[in-house]
Image (cartoon, rainbow, N blue to C red):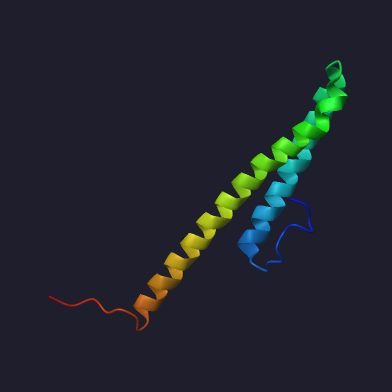
Length: 91
């Protein structure tokens, strides 16, 4: 995902996911470039391979962010319950 496609977020966990994705994308692109240079005619397909790899990383990044959001909501809900939210009935 290019920088202009990424929503602006100040969430440190989301920033960590973005950073990890950027590192992974850079390494994957380097490997694709190296492989394409060794395969006859590979140069003509390397951009397509990079785009497909980026789509896979997009899926992984989206899943990671969804899981983080769900965990954060669970945590906030639990904190709300602890501090004046739903009170458990004592038996």
